[in-house]
Length: 349
Image (cartoon, rainbow, N blue to C red):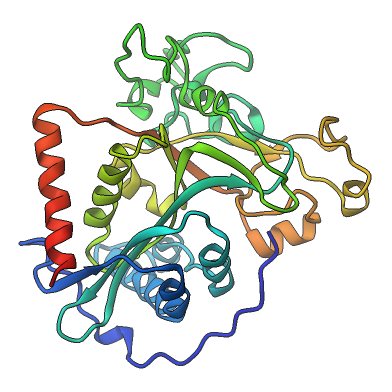
């Protein structure tokens, strides 16, 4: 989707002075807010400032560990555009999430928004086997990948691990991805990869107006934090576990943030799309595939954006990650309830 014009306003405080959240006890000096859409839009400039500061501190942390400057800057990632933040706050429906602030000063220390996953191109697919998804090049890299990443296109069932070559350590690269499956589980078919399960989900809508909405897939749309990111994501995942609308959760991450999301059960999945020329889009029948080949998906891009716009406004292809929404029982449910009580107590401060 094209970036809107968004001029940032001067912030009333410097994020250089904002302390990290306390980790023990969690959020010891902070409080939690659940804003309305109007409130989210009112703090978008603070959110941009926090994104910039979080990236700066991440880079400094990597440098202190001996990383070279170029590597540290690349691993820290690029902060979010203020126009992208404004777009998400304006268009995401529903718009839910958390804000963490310092209890005394009121300074912003973290935020997370979630919504229902929506695409803005008529030709999109979840596919971890397609060469355009880029996952085959990550096999053996140590990243957690969808089990379908090692399969040949059209292959059914789990892939065989190579004994030699670049994919020899696929079992390590894809550790903890293959889940135990119940025989009568309608959400997860036997031998099915995560991308295949995502592709089976229902979707509807007009990509030009409402977007194509995937009602069973939640999305973590915006996240930045100073020491409270793990806590916020854990809380939101527990909220989703109690929300019967969703079976999956996805996020458009960055390579530098992959380890963070892997700690919470997310794995890299393949997403591909076909984009239309603007001249073709006016005459295009959505049921007829365009002549252009499949390419790596860029989240939040219009289906008829020009190639130059895709590169300028969206940069590299999106690093999509996903996980299943876990329903809690027994001891897991008790621990999850304690986490949500913690959220409610901090909201009451």
